[in-house]
Length: 344
Image (cartoon, rainbow, N blue to C red; front, side, top):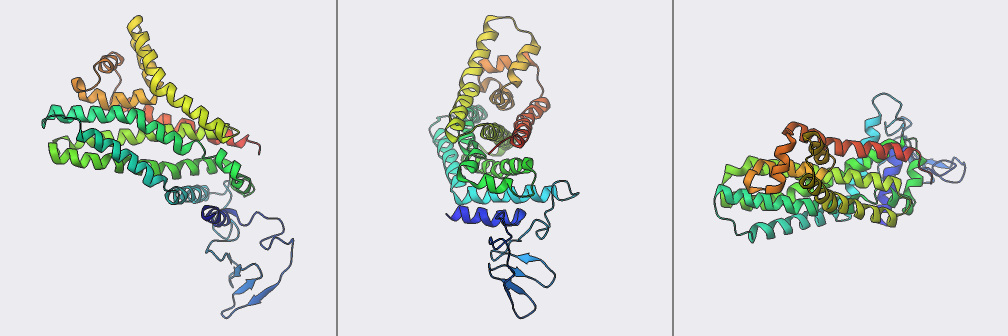
């Protein structure tokens, strides 16, 4: 109920009360009383200031114009709609304990792995530990990201709030992008903080020599999570029920994390594929890009089989980063396009 009240307040900030008949919901009426200072209080509790702005009791505004958040077609206002939706999603994720849960999961697994890895205190030991963390991240981060995002749109529809949001003078695409942005901030923060706690213990044991490498690992891990979060938002925009979205998300995780790489390595071992084919197979999977960014820089300390594949592909770090960004932007864009055709 608390989240529903907050959503209602944020809805008022975006576009006013969507009920017919104005803010009082009775189809008309102008009962109001005057306070000191010239403010007018309507029967529904709204305060009409002398300058004409209508302020809701929770501090929001009654209309999109009053909130200075115009329609998406107005110059300089679309980003305000985007930020309001993103802020709403961020606050809901914080209050629903998702941020704490994800941070705790990442920190617990990472600390457990670093504590019991048994690596020697040497540069080689540090690289082996980071390689082990990267393997852990490949399995854990996509699963958490999909669990966090699969109900971003379809969950709002089943709760009834998507009907209210669609009734507002806000471009549907910004609702999707804002939802993804708000959740992305929470996920990236939880990922960096959770794995960063383990990194603090590593740096204390191995020294600051590996600081740059571990920062690169944290950024790549956050990028991996954001890529799968974008995929989850796309699935949520296409699915008609939460159970369907959950099932599809699990299949997506199994394909990218388990099946794709095994199939790719099998094809490479069985056939003499060209460098372009190897590169295409690698770029077609965000987990493959992540492995290339992290394990490829570790050389012999990483996955030996994957290091061989990476050497054959000839991909640069800049191209890998651009490909990972594309895996974040493209599914989000497709979700924004899909939501325009969604019927409630």
